[in-house]
Image (cartoon, rainbow over all chains, first blue to last red; front, side):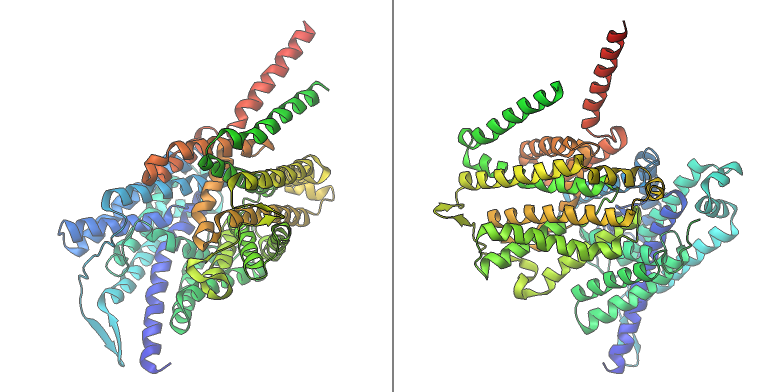
Length: 289
Length: 320
């Protein structure tokens, strides 16, 4: 591997890690706060990409405006999912998880029947050109994912640790019953968690729309990775999810470059199995008393 | 005594209907019945896992292990169907034994995800290694099998072969469900700590349920591979797994009969909605959500509710 390829691969790893982190924090957050395990999270990501496809590629909006629109649209989907699926099934984690598997099927069909299944939806690249680092060329569109991901994670961190509503969310994640005794409205916190979860998945999908082929089944490809990240990170730990996302970003990208994508997926799963054997609570997870 | 007599009559009627069925329907419908019987073994084997609370997401992949084993044994080694079916079950059970070792360390949601990921690992092995698994396109040209002069290419003889195997598997699974082991599985699910405190080795029983379930999934996979004559990694992906979950959610998993009821109802729905091909996943998704939200016990809960009411009425009559 020469220097240019090495730099290229490292850059791609950071981009992949940022995307995985953006997707996985939402998943970890919904699970941490109210034990909501969302199988349709990958479809939320897909919905974010379709918002950009519809507004930017079809309706001709400016790219940043289309990306920003993806946030409220998918956040609203998150809230609807919370109201219609997670709240009625809150006694049983597995029921909510299985019901969102049904939701994933529904969203795939709806999107596929509205905008077509067969042809790939091509979203033109808004930012052409590439950054040149020691002979390695990294497209601006990919580079852009890194600051957006970092900004999103910073905003999330600020919200969770500095804003009252965010602190309340963390309190719910630690102990829902005690949080309720402090006067925190679990009903509202649960909606808030799913709104943030949807918003982050939507943003990730919107940023990836010009980079990845946009199809109704694109969520399928990311959901397994997102789950592996969350299990490796420690289920409910947002910091753990970010750490695991970056590790997996590097592992996937390097193995894909050196071998192939299928091997990369297999190595990712093997990493997760090793973490489970060595540290069942995940990298940064706590052991529940 | 009366319950046993009723059960025997019911069983006799089902057996008579099953034997008469292929002579009163078309070839196509016989194929549907064959698939139904194979799915019957699959859904009942999945229920063994769910009785301990381990809703594995790799069960369809384990059926795939049986199918791929059969493909290799009958295509390259030209083994008889009488050997491929049991051997595929054993191989699936062994793969299940390897998988359950890390899986046993997780519970609930973690188990779900970890089983999904490990199942994908096995599936990716088939995609990756063109030799001997055929890569992304799978394998074709698997013999339909034959016993003596009976060629299983025709649906009716194969239907009877599958019927015998399904009856055998189901009776074993039924007896297991009623046995001390089956009751221990349920105790593990009902209260893990309590089960442990009375001396039940919980991980061991969970592993036993997992391996037994994958063994029978291997039987189903083997029968499927012989019928289709082809295996494809896509036949065993997470979408198929969601359909298996839909069957068991619609029927319910508290009793042995729930998953069977769910499979029967959903097979009819599946066949009736054939013209709506592209919309069918949407319909099944809606059915899944509606059942989980409004009838979490599944269709069987209607019957158990009815029986409870009958028993109560009879009890009050006796008092009066």
